[in-house]
Figure (spheres, protein in one colour):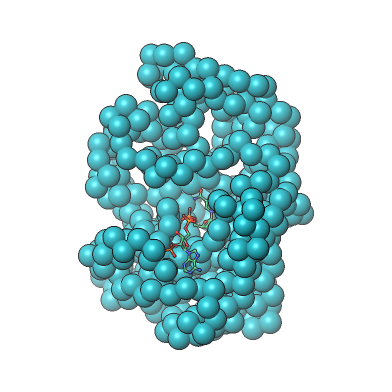
Length: 344
Ligand SMILES: NC(=O)c1ccc[n+]([C@@H]2O[C@H](COP(=O)([O-])OP(=O)(O)OC[C@H]3O[C@@H](n4cnc5c(N)ncnc54)[C@H](OP(=O)(O)O)[C@@H]3O)[C@@H](O)[C@H]2O)c1
């Protein structure tokens, strides 16, 4: 894939992010049946869906790629339809509506709820456990890649290599606990019905319109303090995360496969802030001090299957800095990566 020096517009950003890798194009040649993406209407689903369509086209295979969401924003379904997806509007919390969805052999599950959990705990638990129950029941004959999060792990030492897939979960707070609930419900369905499943434990996808790098870069650009309490994190270019999610369809098993999905490095908030400061030509205001622990995952298993990310951390910082300088669009959705007590 051609990686541009800089990204100048949302159209270019979406085009780069939804470019299928050659491995994904090859996989589409052997993957049987259509693909359905549940909860497609969020930050990642749109480009993931478009990438799937582009991969099928490049592979020369006929597949329906179907996006399911409530489509609270109708512009999203218009964009997906224009890109060649079929869209079905559905509230996945309603099991009767889920039961009316067409049977499709390949499911990518992306629905979830994080922000608003503080004070809205019941809705978060329902979204993150009841929807999986509806889905794993209706799609018991499909293979399912279920998005999850590295937040199900405990905080680990920043000097460690990060939590492994075998590290016992110890989620902090209602959001992370409900995400472990999501995994447990999917796993139960997989074991009951022999449904091939892959739990896709993602740590921080980076787009230019949101993400940890955008959050840190924006603070440095605006002269706001960057909090160092959570001094380290992992992240991965959203295009690579999306590609790996689609490639994961070929690795679903029962009992489920579990994969940590993130970049290879433990990234220092201080170093990232100082790199942005160097690019912007202004000082980084740093507050607090690094704790000895952070939410960190080890992605060596995924790297073994898919290879490393195609976009380096340095390139991501340069893209993000340029995006901030040119006033590029923001989703207005801070990641709150600095939260350590699990309250979102
Ligand atoms: N982005 C990250 O860095 C990151 C990190 C770790 C884990 N994850 C996980 O990865 C998944 C995808 O991430 P994301 O950032 O794209 O999430 P997101 O922005 O929250 O998108 C999820 C989408 O699911 C849809 N949805 C929610 N409830 C629904 C319902 N009842 N019925 C139908 N659709 C529903 C919503 O779209 P509509 O309003 O159209 O229904 C929502 O925008 C999420 O499960 C998230 O927990 C993401």
